[in-house]
Length: 194
Image (tube, rainbow, N blue to C red):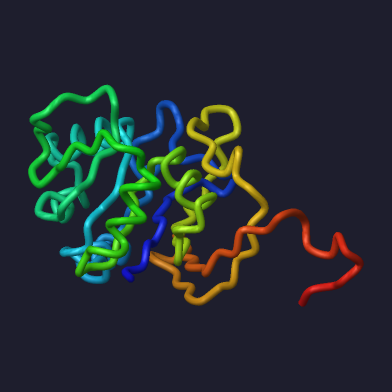
């Protein structure tokens, strides 16, 4: 069975975007872009929802730095509102239930899977126990006044075991975890976890 990694970029206060700020909050740098171009498996299919597809396909069409690496990667787009054919190359529209589809894809795929943005999709996949890794690139900004797309709202309680960390361009922090969805806060039964 293949692994599924959730990939997010977010501000320190947990927003995926902010009104009026440029892409990547204007902080993408050479180390980060090099990592995107070399560390990301270019054959690993990407899973995304309609909102992320609309945003990222527009950025790719406009030649936004860092999006060119995504063009050749297979992309599964979960939507009931988008219409075929999708314009971003290598994009496949999926209308069936995302959890059912991804569970089957994990069994049948010959490549690891990952997400791109797609807050609601990621929440559903995590709740279904389908997520093996959780990777966040933390940008050193707080967007409390202008932030949009709060990433972690509606999530269950999740314990995260850090398995990798890295700093890009002396400012961006990569944090990669193995997630464990909890039934509630640890220690409810009087036990203490370390």
